[in-house]
Image 1 (cartoon, rainbow, N blue to C red):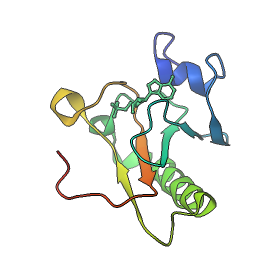
Image 2: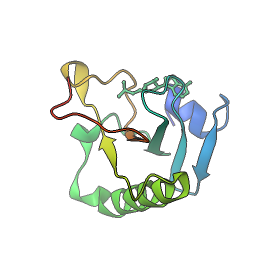
Image 3: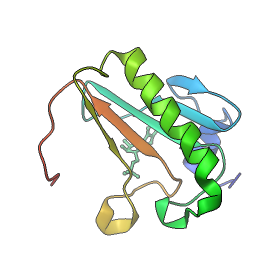
Image 4: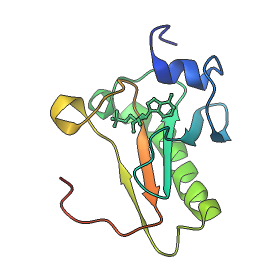
Length: 115
Ligand code: AMP
């Protein structure tokens, strides 16, 4: 855990969140500033700065993350209509919290490409 990392502290329960999933590897909670009717962040408990730090060794962890995303989408009732999964990397990618996370967004249509 990185003591100065917001998402490490949320995952540890030190900062409250509207949690929708928690297991030994992964947590998911609602985004504090939702950009869609469903906007949930899914992240590893492990402090990984961004997708740019991922290696093949993270394969099982990523499998768990994507299984949680699919399960959460079903529970939120957005699986049939479709949804978007986004992970921003770095400043120009729009990343504002330096702890790997995936945005699960749904409940409305999205345009392509994103702005
Ligand atoms: P990104 O900009 O891709 O790094 O995503 C960070 C996301 O974290 C943004 O969508 C923020 O609205 C969200 N966020 C920031 N602080 C909190 C918080 N305390 N609880 C839930 N979501 C947060």
